[in-house]
Image (cartoon, rainbow, N blue to C red; front, side, top):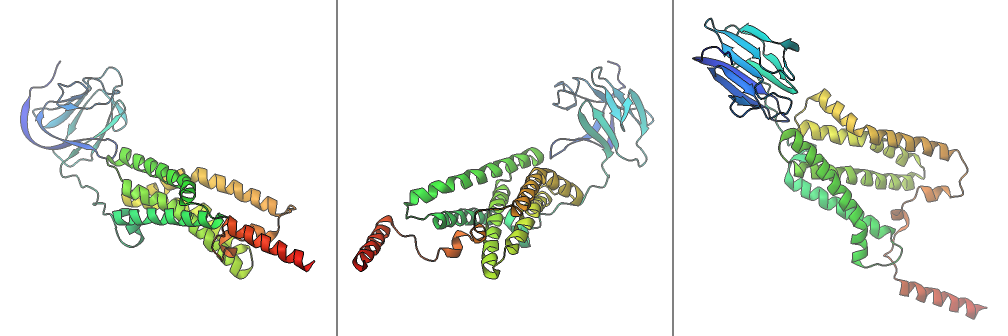
Length: 330
């Protein structure tokens, strides 16, 4: 292979190999530098679209940088243009060079190239719910207790504890599924697991709509109208998921405003479309005849559940006493 004579020069060149989440950086100190997938290269890139010997980086006697494509399969690109061979004077300030080897992106830059500001995890205020492990535990417990209490209120007759915990399993499995999906996406993107933050996000996605629904029912009962719950559900169904995802992406993935907003809206789109369809159906049904009393569609179990659950034996005794009383009167 025809390469220039190896020269050891003081160099401040950095080759950045872009990867998922965390990029790889190689300081170029001894030339020539050969890049490819073969294990005898100076820089090895384990990407199947990269050729065994893909790119040669060398330095001539005048200090100019030479970039030469070695690949016959997928080729190389320099600043988005096909590359065969290029000579670049890197002794003067120059913008970073964008390279593409097959499907892998690289950047050739000087070591004094400014870097972005450090992304700081702002564990203050409401962000504490996502970045502190203790809050992850608190939110998971609060979510489970909320649904456990709801199951208790919705049960007419007294049941064993196993019954209530059995009804709690769908919420546990749903929360676990959301946690694993979100943590898996973070693992692919950031090369680390964010299980605590993902568990907090999953708990909030289940707990907040439930709490807002109970608040809406209570307000309906208080003002004797349907509009409080309707407005609360409108805000919850269309804004809650995008806002929580946006906060998670900004804090955990350190994304800027517009990318975080775009990703949050993208993942929320199916839920928003579904909620819009449900809203259209509900508006249509309100204009049609229904045999169900209006108050039955607004009151929750908490509005009339003022006494503990009565056992079946006590209920039968009261019914027998009432029947005996009616028989004696007649």
